[in-house]
Length: 227
Image (cartoon, rainbow, N blue to C red; front, top):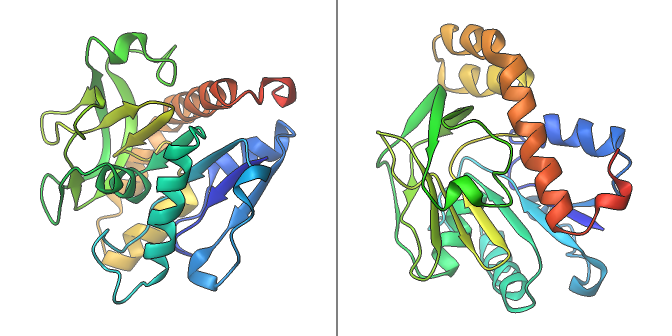
């Protein structure tokens, strides 16, 4: 089973939830902010950890982050395939010992991410153009952990993606859809141009996000369920 970790009610799986359902991929949810119990690690084949408005150091306000960090450490120890998105990538970077900076190298809106030489042959990023289009919505940023492979960058934020064993952390959002982007814009009273630009780029954003998910399912051995 694929476990989706949702950290924030305003940061759901969006496109990925739709694709997993349409592709008939066995999956479940862990919403630690709602007090849900974590499924036994032995029942899982892989995990995707989503974003959230909190920072990695906000454990006092969001105590569930402690349990989530331990979960990620357990995933790494057992070599469970892991895909951390935005906050998920930042949490993964932190448990690997890398600094995560508050309000540094933030990005908001559609942009293109460039691949490093290692990223061009990475199994998660396979099939993406270089640079590839995606969507950003982050204020914080991670550094690449020691021993990890640096996979992608933008001029504004060098740490866009890394791989450590069978775990990947990314700073961008391949899982969002227009409804999520609109919610985020409204919560910060942002410019409607952000949503309009997302809508214009949706076909290529959708294709890139689906490619990343399909690649991760293949890595996790869930290919027999992929259609």
